[in-house]
Amino acid sequence: MVEPSAPILIFDSGVGGLTVLAELRKVLPDAPVIYVADRAALPYGDKSEAEIAARVCGLLGRLAERYHPRLICIACNTASTIALGMVRDVLETPVVGTVPAIKPAAELSKTGVIGLLGTKATIRQTYVDNLEAEFATGKSLLRHAAPELVGAAEDKLRGVAPDPAIFAKAAEGLRSQPGGEKIDTVVLACTHFPLLAEELGAAFGGQVNFVDGAQGIARRIAYLTQGQSFDRQGDDFAIVTGNDSDNPALLEALRHYGIGRIQRL
Ligand code: DGL
Image (cartoon, rainbow, N blue to C red; front, side, top):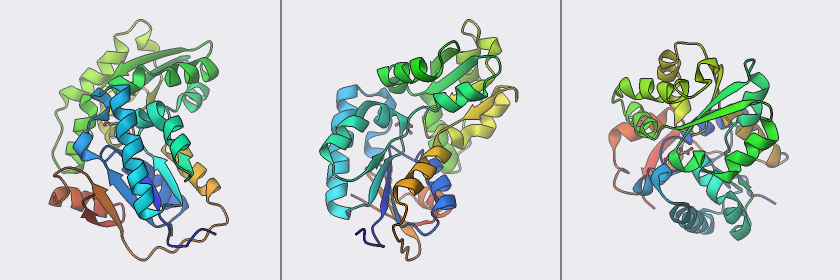
C-alpha cells in the first residue's frame, strides 16, 4: 500500500517542470509533491546524451532512495527523450516522462505544417524521429533548437524581463525554413517554453496554436495513482542543486505553485 504522505517527485533541470506541476495541482490538489530543479547542471539541452543520462539516472536514484516517492515525473523533454528508458530500467518507482506533443499537434494542424521548438539535444533525438514517423506521417515537422528560451524562462520567473529579440529569433528559426510560412501549430517541446507562451504568441504574430504535454502528463499521473490516498500537509518543498537554493526571487516564484521552502540536496 502506498503511504498517503508519499510524494510525487517532479524533476527538471530548472523551473520548466512547474508547467507540469501547475496542471498536476488541478487534477490532484491533495498530492504531496517534491519539486526538484537540477540547477547545477542547467541547461541540459547543451550537454551530450551520455552526460544527461548519467546525471539524470544518478540523481533520480539518490532521490528515490532518500524520499521514497510513489511516482517520479521527469518533467523535462531533454531528459525524457534521452534517459526515460534507462531510468525505468534502474528504478522500481513508476516513472512518467515528458515527450514532445507531436500527436496532438498533428491532430490540430490544418495546414499540415507543424513547428517544433526544443533544446539542441531534444531536436536531434531518434525518439522525436519515431514520434514524427508514428503520428505525423504525411505532414511536415520543422524543428528548431531555441536554447535561449530556457534562460529567458528562468529569468522571467525571477522577475527579470527577457530580451524580446530572443522570441523573434525563435519564431524566425521556424518561419525561415522551407514551408515555414504555413506553420499553424507549434509544439513547445521543452517544459520551460509554456512559461513564455505570451511572448512567443506575440513573436509569431498570434497566428499559431501552441501545444505542450503538461495536461496530458497530469492526466497520466492521476490515472497511475488512481485509488491511492493523498495527505498533503500544507506547502510542499523544492530541492534545488547548485548555489541558487537561497535565491529569494526563485522562492517567491515557487510559492505560486504551492512550494514554501527550498532545500539543498
Ligand atoms: N526543461 C527542459 C526540457 O524540457 C530543458 C531545459 C534545459 O536545457 O535544461 O527540455
